[in-house]
Length: 209
Image (tube, rainbow, N blue to C red):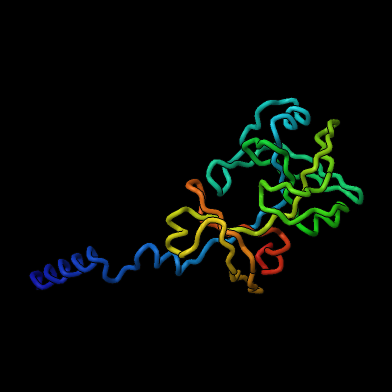
């Protein structure tokens, strides 16, 4: 019996080494799907606006967030528009060339601004808002409604058969599954695989709880 057990164990070891009985990494990822992350309202600051609002040249990190190199700071600002304001808006780092406020369509209506739907970094036609920190305030044409998008590494793009800049349709699974169209793919060497949707879209899918 010991000899039989030894032979069986060796056969199983060899089968496992050859990949039998185990999914390949790509198959495992396909089974899990792509993580969907809710991108809550937030602000990116330029160095000049960081200095104007907080009197500092650096934005110290509080904790890392999902995309490599990006982080949540302890800083918070108030967004002010013609119709209302939103308090306690997170400031994300690192600092950027231009100040940007990424909000949802619901936020835009609450503020009373006509913020265009744009990918992060595209401030074409961005709405003017005021940013306040304590007794300091500045005006910036910075408000955009964050457009849904997919972050991928080149290896992810190859696995899914897509390319940088391509628009795809994505089915979001939740309590109320929905299909999102016109989802741009953003492929970089510093990406973490994730679908980014705003709070309105997350709530529509039942993911915003």
